[in-house]
Structures are given as structure tokens and as C-alpha cells.
Length: 318
Image: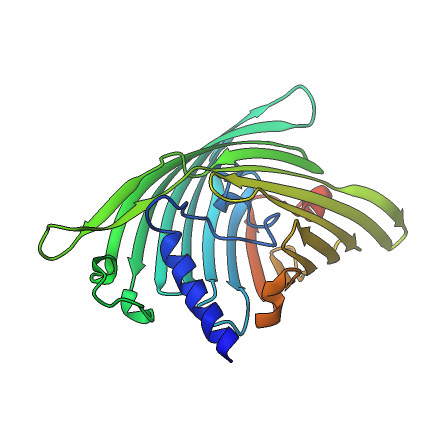
């Protein structure tokens, strides 16, 4: 019990310092990143040639009070020849802090001489941050740092991305937050700078491919490996590797590994041409596994196609 109380306090303090002084403000983490691409790369908007609505809920480190919870809703669609628009809303909570992000994405695609397209994207984001210090067990209640909470502090940001894709493969590189913004709160007396918040650049590289392993009569198997690399100054590089199998263009199952962090099981079901349902379970491989029962992630995608869905479109998972 004592260890859990200590870990709870450490978790809360990490949440605070991730928003203060020289520490980097970190983006939300996703296991099903291959379905949730627009949150990290604006060039993805409109690339599926359909009105695409997605929702994702992630509960991380179940059983650990103050652990991260993330909700994401996005919509994107092609709006003209080779152009796409998207809107994303993210609610990210950890300990005493709540951050809401509202992003608008624009992409423009260029046809190549092969079967690939190259899309370039721009992202505009408004970050709204709240931190309630009253939720902490503060060692020194007189410390001016914790006297006044952060209340709906808004900071703008911009991002860029590039996305090369075909019916069966993709490669993307992006920086969703290019401005290393810093802003602060002042106490009621307007004399003390209580909080210094820094937003650092996150660099993403992602890639995936769909291999046709077996196809005969009414049975088919496709192999879908993917990788995501994330780097931000002040934190270790994060590498996510996943391998999924798609059966009969309906059911998908696979595993994922997050370097020096955890392993995941991923399931998916194409319920209809429009509906896809995904689920992921993460198990920690660090000492943190002693204090939680893993992480759960649920994903939903709904699409309205402007024309009948092609066979290859149904096989795409990105």
C-alpha cells in the first residue's frame, strides 16, 4: 500500500513537470497508430477518398490512480481534386492535468509516374491546458509554484507532414507541433511567475506494407507490418513495431512491441464496408507492471464512400 501511495505521488509530479520549466510536453500515445494517422500527420487528410470519421478511447495503466486517459475524435474527407481537409479533437488527462487539442488539417496530393501519391500537409492547433494543483499531496503548501492552478491556458501551434502512399504501402514523416511555445501564469499579486510551460517539437516517422500471403477461392491471408518512430528532445526515442494478419478481408489479429516499454495484442473486425472496430491491449514490460493491469484501447471508424469501395481499399488498414 505504501509503495502504491508513493507511486501515485510520483505519477502526479511527473504530470506537473511534463508541463513545467525545462521538461517537454509529450503528445498522447497510441497503439493503433496505423488507424489513427491524422493525429500525427496532417498529410493523411483525405487520402482514403471517403468521408472518414474515427473515434479512439485509451485507458492507460489501469488500476493506477491518475494514469493517462485519452479520447480522440477526427473527421476528414477529400474536398477537391487531390485536396483533403480534416478536424481532430483530443482530450488527454493525466493526474491533475487536462489538455484539449483542436486541430484543422489540410493536405494536397501529387500523382507520381507509378501507383504512388505524395501528399503534403499543414496542421493548425489550439492547445487548451488546465492543471488543478489541489489534486496533489503537496509537501510544502506554501510553495508559490503550487499556489495557483493553470486555468484554460491557450497556446497555438502549427505542424507539417509528408505522406507517400499506394493501395498497399505508405511512408510518412511529420512534425505536428513545430512551435516550441513557452507561456506562463502569474500569481494573483502579479509578481510571481508560477508556471513555465514548454511545448517541444515531436518528430514522427511511420511506414507500413500489406503483403498478399495467400489467396484461394473464399479464403485469403494478408500480412501487415508497420513501424512508428517518435523522437522528442528530453525523452528516449520511442519505437513501435507491429505485425498484423488480415483474414478474408474481415478479421485482423496481431502483436505489437514498444521498445523498452511493453507488448500489445491487436484485434480488428471490418463489420461492413463502412464500419471497422479495433481493440488493443498493452502489457508493460517495465517495473511499472507491478502497479497496474495494463492498458486498453478501443477504435471505431465509419466511412461514407463517394464511389463503390474497391477491393484494394478494403484491404488498406491505413
